[in-house]
Length: 128
Image (cartoon, rainbow, N blue to C red; front, top):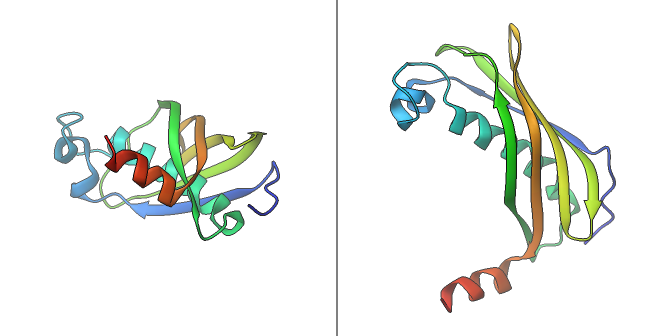
């Protein structure tokens, strides 16, 4: 693994479509941006931040997410998520994550990931 350092950040964006609304994902009844979609975007930001620093044989898996979804976003709007690497404990990484739309913040929290060897991880799962 190349040298990871705290302070690494990445931002990713997506348009709110009816396919990533609460009604479509089953996390609610309204056609607003779904919390599971926001979580996935936050995770994508974290992965994007560290990906250039991982070896070809390495990946990362999400192990914890503690977030709030503070404001709704309608279809057609763009949501951006930013992840900042705030702590490194061996192979465990801690990120501060935020999400926003054009009107301001919509969510925030802490996300943890663990760096894995892809082949070993998959082999362990296949032996179950």
